[in-house]
Length: 226
Image (cartoon, rainbow, N blue to C red; front, side):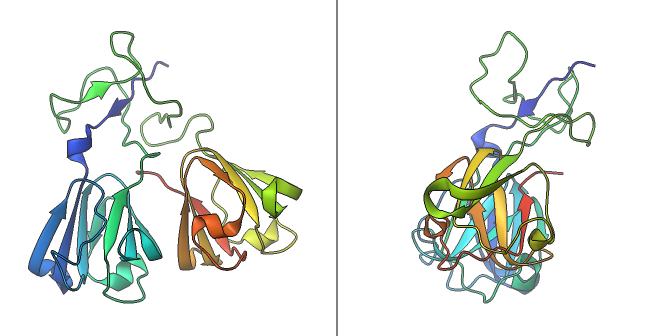
């Protein structure tokens, strides 16, 4: 079977913030990273993600609590596991692609959509998830966690979601990690609950580098578009 992967242009990434629940009140649309949303909205009680995956932050300049959002509707802040209605910054998660299979561009794609696998187009991405229909083929998410800082001590490599991290790891603490492929979310508690911490492709020598003050991890999940 041959595969053809289509990646939307950056202008197809869109998130809409609403002041009130159920998409009411003042609204603000973003098509890219924004360091300070307070200029546009005092509160955020509902969100619509029209394209792409995003991480939103409690504070300006990408600080405070993090919440990872997939495409979809969030009628109140409990739907993104928020602790309050305060959202002050947001950015696109760059290691995620919206993917379909086939050599005919589907109608939902715009004329600016590029095939990044076919030989007549320059492929610039280094790691891509490939799906036959909606099922994953191959290994496009790969993460390695370590029990000590600076990638020392016992380690474990992961390629799939883990709702109960302690079942496979000798304790709940992760002091450093390497993300080889994809983007991942660490959760404070099992079953994808509690505080969220996004880790993208790269090296994290200490847990403080992914924004937490403690090394405890209860569960972890891959960031993907279904």
